[in-house]
Image (cartoon, rainbow over all chains, first blue to last red; front, side, top):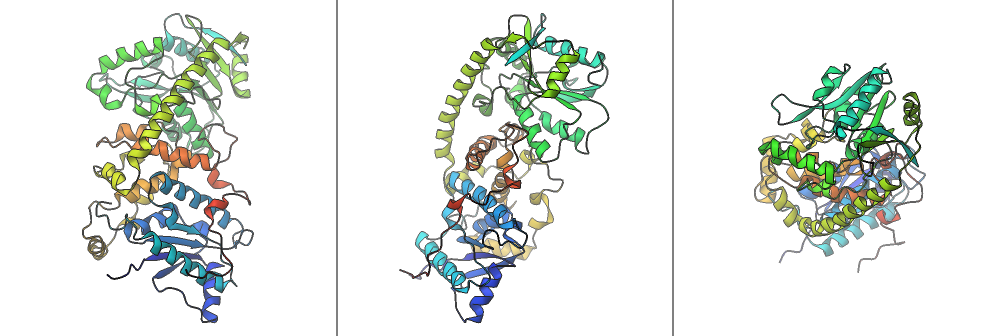
Length: 140
Length: 376
């Protein structure tokens, strides 16, 4: 049987998350190929819909990385993102849709190691969880 | 806390209306926003009135809620306060929605007197429309005995019985026969009483016991109902079965008082795709339901407004397919509001959770990093 290759969406903020990704690149580090990176201006600019839509339309997990607390380029974006993600996770928990498929972890510009580790760790975490039951449903 | 008393010899509605009439005649308010029975006799709509002659047809506590009062108030004061004072008697859930809308800057309360009313719950709109006369009779009985037969689901579990965000609360429960309580909650409410030469001197002890009794009963209902519901909606299988009937009409969004966006994301071009996109999704899922994005709409709406949801039940009343929208929203909203220790509509001073933050909070949302990750 073909082993399960999850599809993962990784949102990185322009200022820190993407920077971590670039640092990783400059050190020739690698991360799983099935992690699809998407750059957003700030984690605070993510709406709940940006997390829900991939989960419904084909992703097995969504991970979000932005600046560490106090480092946000827009000062408060990451704190707001944390609140917003808390709402989404609470919603997924209440309805039994798998809040563990959403991760939020800070990655700073220089933390290339942390970026590739997060991608690999989340990938393994989702592999263990198995495919997202929501993504294969036709009646969404 | 003490309240004033006003006479209501000819019934509750009449007592409320004569108080409002007096306020209008004395120039304390310049206009009223009141539900009036439509000429066909089977529904009610909010009417903005400046004269007393329309007041005879008004019913401050109609048996149904076809329009959320806060939504009507938002239409009126969205672009700021007018020069004149408007009094708006509303049910507890409408007051709470108005408070939320004020925080969202969709209602301006500066020249508005929010007047709270005790509410025994309302009947489901569809049931009422089948036989308005029977509904009216049921409601008259409910106002006497303070127990409504077959109300809406959300009304049975509504436990914030007497909201304190209203400037002035008209207390029906626990008032002596032929009287109503006037309870000032804010400086604005106190000033209003003073101008009417009413003194808040009556004890509210009898009222408080009754309120407590009702609140306890409803809280018990709530715990039981939510526990059962939690099992019914859990998991993609059950959830999608519930939403399978959804025809994507977005009525629930349109009647929701808290859904105020001028352009809803779910109505926008952002979700309208080329045929290729749909074909690709159909291939991936082995078929794609059209209209698409039903679940995204429901979940998205929950995540957008569950922090301000006041469980008024408008969405379920408006649903042509009888999907238990307001129940699911109540459940989701409760869990989400607990995360922030927030209760929608409780107070004007409490800031919206999504506009503030604390530096040290919600650590459970973050996934901690182990120094280096070693795959097992």
